[in-house]
Image 1 (cartoon, rainbow over the protein chains, first blue to last red):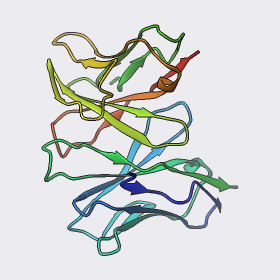
Image 2 (cartoon, rainbow over the protein chains, first blue to last red):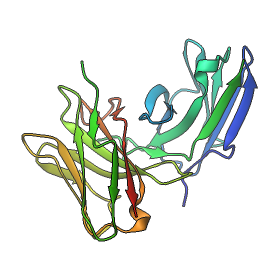
Image 3 (tube, rainbow over the protein chains, first blue to last red):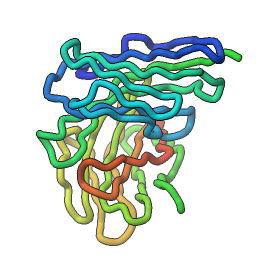
Length: 115
Length: 114
């Protein structure tokens, strides 16, 4: 039972254009959402997060949008750069349930930014 | 300022052998999480430990898997009598605080069971 879904296994974007990565979740109790970026042979690195009390969080070229009613979030990367090519994991946790972050990951979307 | 260290990076075992995976958290971090990534899947939570305590092992298979985080030394994920289905990448993460704190991941150990 996959609680965090990323329905696009891969995405290709031209350098300089916008990359939009989508994520859906099923557990309405999730109240904290994260995006991680992963290069081959490395561990995931934290990119950006958003609390359920917000609908948008921005950090430089990266913006995460949260639509709670649709149980959907998206990561926008503008402008996309070749170095952004990596696997992006959407993740979520229910911080009310546990005092620690038991993070549930989606299956990932592989982004390729074409020069 | 070393990050999370995991060793070995690659481990090959034959069916029935034991696998020991080690994780040294970042300096100042006393909270450790283990995750497993099967091919074409996301990371799956296995266990959360604090020094000398297992807090949540709800993601660990009931048999053959165990984890510890002793007072001194690295956290150890131990898999006894490995089977081919145990082949995966195992990632360790650490955080400074119990909750509301970013988890920093190690590079992972890729276990291959022949």
